[in-house]
Length: 378
Image (cartoon, rainbow, N blue to C red; front, side, top):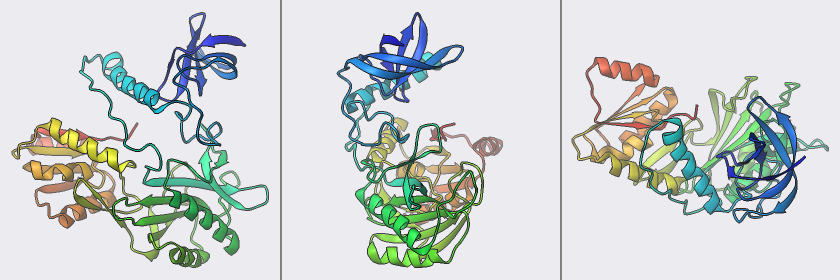
């Protein structure tokens, strides 16, 4: 046990302190906290501790507005004021360039989100069973697959919680059991919801280990209860790894995709389509990127990891040619359809790995003036 001063906070929301020069990470602490900690893990270069008592509280700290925050692994900054979270994220960008990359890049101030509650247009809830055998939904505890029930996440639209609760109730009624990863039995694995903020359309995707007849009745009852539900899809995932979605979709109700509007364009979103979860910030980000690209109408723009084409298509009116590259075939189909839907004729899309596609374009002597990159985290 030690009494320590938390010096700063990582982008994962962990406080950092030093004990005789040895670095220790302490979850759910803030820079400026003075606290008693107990060391719970020691590695060669660093260790981990947990708080046993707070002696002095940082001005960055606030009361977490979620009853399950300390158990749930969905958030890591809810014990901090938003201004502190922004400061940490801005510093992470600076560190990536300067400390890790060795690049002295100017870094403009971070732009805060206009909304910090109910802004996410997508939720993926794992499901499980409570002690009384009823289906529950929530989020996994940090670095585990232990389900923490969460009936009202403040980051998601309130409608998501209502639909998810009704899905669980109907599954109990119709005898659909939650999938058990350890025993590998049961049916329903995840409740996946997404919303078109401008259109108001909602998609429900039930991720299951196999198809089952009651899903049709469940879909019909949900569609009758919620007019916003324009698409209900059954996704089949029989895999035994951590991948959430399988490749097979069965349409239970409505249409196979929903629509939303971004940067004045209409986009169609299927269950497998990537789409940024914070629409308002996404519009600001894309418009800034277009401004910084300095497009005059004469440029060839290559959009790598383009998904359904949102970034490239948002800039199409300001460029000569847009070439999107994406490895997911269904996303490429969506991107092409989105171009047609919005009357964009100067955009084309290649289904290929980014490395393969850039080699191919190089062989064809296609030289981009601007390259857009929005790659996967890894």
